[in-house]
Amino acid sequence: MTREKPKNLWLSRWGFVLAATGSAVGLGNIWKFPYITGEYGGGAFVLMYLACILAIGIPVMMTEIAIGRRGRGSPIDAISRVVREGGGHPAWKAVGSMAMLAGFMILCFYVVVAGWAFAYTWKMLDGSLAASSVEGLAQVFEAHNANPWALGGWSVLVALLTLWIVGKGVQAGVERAFRWMMPGLAVMLLILVGYAFTSGGFDRGFAFLFSFDTSKLTGEALLAALGHAFFTLSLASGAILTYGSYIPDGQSIVRTSFMVAIIDTCVALLAGLAIFPIIFANGMDPSAGPGLIFMSLPLAFQQMPFGTAFGVLFFAMVSIAALTSAISMIEATVAYLNEKHGVSRTKAAIGSGAVLLTISLLAMLSFNVGADWKLFGTTLFDALDYLTSRWMMPLGGILMSLLAGYCLRAEIMRDELDLPPLGHALWLYMVRYVCPVLILMVFLHALGWLGF
Ligand code: PFF
Ligand code: NA
Image (cartoon, rainbow, N blue to C red; front, top):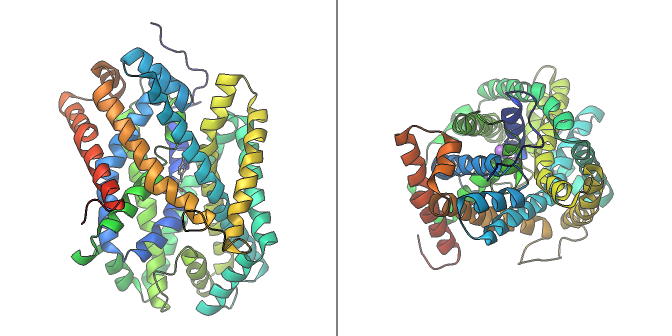
């Protein structure tokens, strides 16, 4: 059987690394990581999160990229082809459908959060964040969310930008933007950490992140940590697999996976080191929830030299990081419609855009007029986050591990990963035993069938 010829390839050797890092590094690192770390009490959560990245995130990422490259297509097509070549039931392609659905569902609430970052870039400029106290900033955030027109307007803007870039196609639209953005974001985070060092709360912030008390190692926190490991690395949501399908043969999947995971983790830890000292120095509550960074960082910008300019730049960078992640969430769907059904990328973007706009506007209403509309006992915004991070992505991860670990003929993954024997054995051990058992335990706990 002849292997599928790639239709699209990254332009340069760095194309995949840049795009996958662009997908991975986003609001998950700068917004979600600090806020859930705050909610779960700090160090114990961070430790479990790091363990999940290492034991599950990296092996699953290698698996996904390998399947994408081997099958050369959107998640559904790639899995179908790999199964046809390597053995396994055609029904495995359902894992691809679930991943695409997860990516799309994430996008529906992600554009709302990205809208916050865009709006705060503007609010830094127009002075509405100047000279505010902790309470004042909380009020600004609440007032912004209470107004569906403001909140919806920014979400729509993000959605349209995303669709426009994706509609234009991978190489042209995506690859260029990643180049200058990532180093810029890293430098700004380092400067913020430097500021946090002088803020008077550094010791407490550092201790909060890295020292833990064992009573906080709970099953509930492990569940959150596992879900976040998938979310932050963009796993089991179509993004990494589809981007992987554009990697040239011969480029090391293992090396790139480690690179992406390490960069992503460093950005999250830097964000934590920048934010928590400011929170403690100003007597804020680390478990303040989704508004945490928007209510704390402007305080630092007020107090530092050139703070306004710096704040504008910072929120602009976060907005761009969010956009590069958003693009990757819908890339799988657009690639699927394009390859499978011959719909042009532009038309595919417009079609999926209509659905996206409808659902994301409903999710946006969770913060104001729709605060009482409940789905599974939570608002639509929280339900989208909960269903994807807690259930769909870990489930996708288990299934992908089982497919690669048990069903496919061994030489497929051996070819693609191209590891020395010991390394390969280690990967195999992870996808056969560690990932499925750990994820299953966490599921059983979530269902209340396993107490810990
Ligand atoms: N990894 C992104 C972040 O940390 O912000 C979020 C994400 C992107 C999740 C792409 C899923 C995805 F397909
Ligand atoms: Na991330």
